[in-house]
Length: 217
Image (cartoon, rainbow, N blue to C red; front, side, top):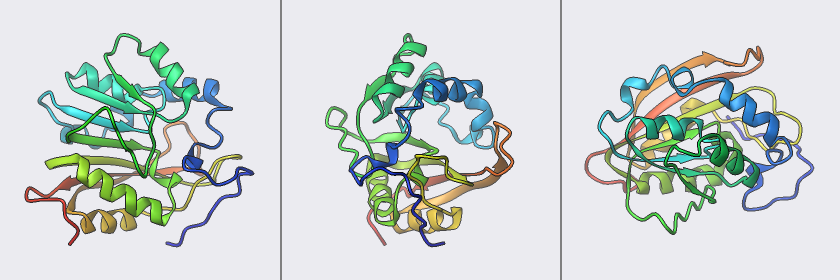
């Protein structure tokens, strides 16, 4: 599927995918917290690491997923480049023990957090990246995963909200890109939107790092 850039009225920038989120952060904070981690990830809960580990939540928003993972005993780094959403998350989940970071794909420097992760989550993030950014991001995520580590990615399909910067991204493309960097698909499912938007649907993917290494094929 070819990329279709949605007009946003915002100029290009390293974090252009964050366009439209700061202005609507108050409403989004309510929307994000209306559904639970278990509801959003119901099809893949059995694949979430059972033993306490190190997890990275990229584009964490208000920290709904990060807080749920921390409650399961994991050490969680939550990456959120929109300051307004981070502030909501730090308020709502003040006692969760989440380590909040201001960073963004595709570079995702994580200068204060060296080492690899047992799992990486990217919920409603991937469609903000163009084709080149997705390649760079997949390589970066592969490098951040331990052997056998899993990448949980939820893809949004549907009309682009006003002011947002999104691309059409298929599950098939994501699976193929992951395989290039040593990630094997262990789950793929589709579901309707949990907020009742008939025009929006979601793909849920879990990609697992090969036990050997994460070098491109």
